[in-house]
Amino acid sequence: MTELSLFLAAFITVFALGFQQQNVAGRHYLAAVFTSMAIGSAQLFLWRLAPTATPTEIMATLAGGPAGIIAAMWAHPRIAKFWRGRA
Image (cartoon, rainbow, N blue to C red; front, side, top):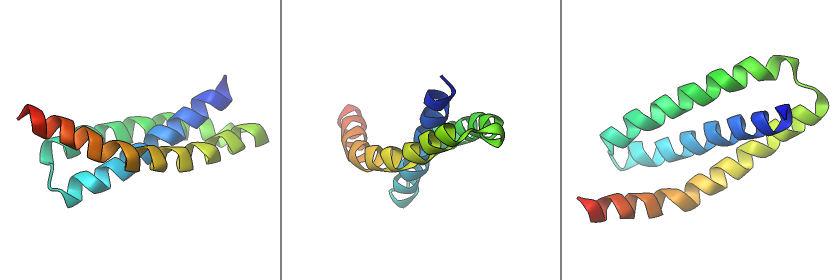
């Protein structure tokens, strides 16, 4: 269970950081506010669990980062397009 929690915390942290970079580059102010909150929340959770991580928990944490950035790179243009269509 902790492996999954660490994977998800790392995934969300890196996903949000990658998403945030695109928000800043595109000057999406409101999206940047919400993404910043997601970054902070995920990092707090990650920092709480990581100090006592076992080797398998460390591997799960390290796997979450690459998965998160790839997902953010895929998702950002699609989500931005969806929100532009609603405006």
